[in-house]
Length: 400
Image (cartoon, rainbow, N blue to C red; front, side):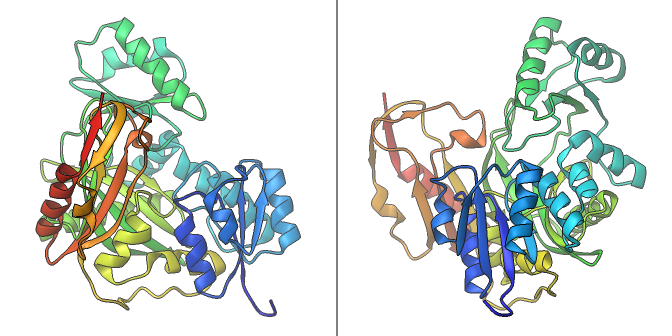
């Protein structure tokens, strides 16, 4: 292990597995920590540790004992504050605890956006339903969104109209409160427009935009993401507007030496930032799609940033048009799946079906309710989208 860099990976689930594997491929000693002893990534780590990764004291102890050179918390936000404190106390180069708090609390994030002029919707934060109802009646017109101040994965989000009754408002507020890690809820104006994400690497305060991702969601009331595609099909002007908004937002948050995943909408020719995660994006966006579409290894870049090593942000592999779509079959007990053979095509890069026969397929109210995914590559984004959509329709889930 002489001169071998040592990386602490906070969480070792399926979304973190590509990061663990990539770090090992790069010749880095990987310490993977997760509270679940069955987390799939633990068996791939050089040193697996079962520990509560949300405990700052426990993780500081692990970081000191292992004498790590860097820490990363990919595709998740539950331990961002922990990562920030480790960086602060051990003098590592990643995101600070102060910046991590801003990047995981939507209210503080919106305050930073407003302070530094990054475009975002009007919003207010509440822990009391009566105060939220009063503000809704007095300060908001038209459709609004209720969502947890601290959460991810589209959980606890509701779209409300201006004619909603207080009883229904209170019911939805309670749902958002239960899903919020700090028990506070955001009330914000609804931006009616297409959704995007912007994939970013920040190194020594330089914000590098790698690509823009087009999104498909369920829309109201839950806004669950059904798929993503790269490169964007939007006009050059729209892409530039989105990039500029994301750069402004990242600078407002003050995050550095990390990956960022910004989410935005366009309405009436203007970009609005929904939120920015100071981490690799989930749903395979950062770990698979960005690499395939840009030729830039975003995972390797994020790992190097965490270790204080200059990342390579130039294409090193061929570029493809790429699309991921999620299986969301009719709710009910799953009794059979047919026509899976259509997935045996060279254009299919990766696929997985999550439930087994006998499992209950839930209504899709959050990203946790989806039943599988397929990633395809094609010569144009339009062809990639069309092919992925056809596969989603061709694979048949039988439920009763």
